[in-house]
Image (cartoon, rainbow, N blue to C red; front, side, top):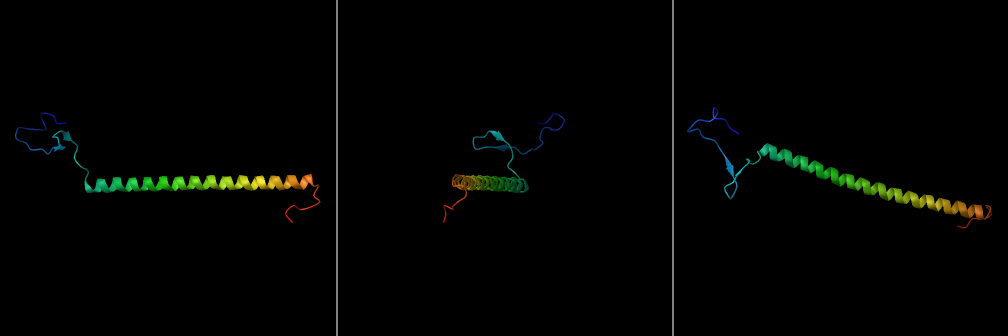
Length: 89
């Protein structure tokens, strides 16, 4: 971390230790903490929005498949009756 030329006997330096006395890194500054919180909030929002969009797309796809199946069934009924009558009436 420091070389012999940078530190001299009697120089003061700040170190950070945890509850057990083990050296650790300095806590985040206020601006760093705000930046990390903003990035986390944007990431969370993107995850929620992405999940919602994916679920909406799956729901829409399911509804379209049901609609296409209904069309196929009705056209099959029409062909089977040679177009003579409407089963819904």
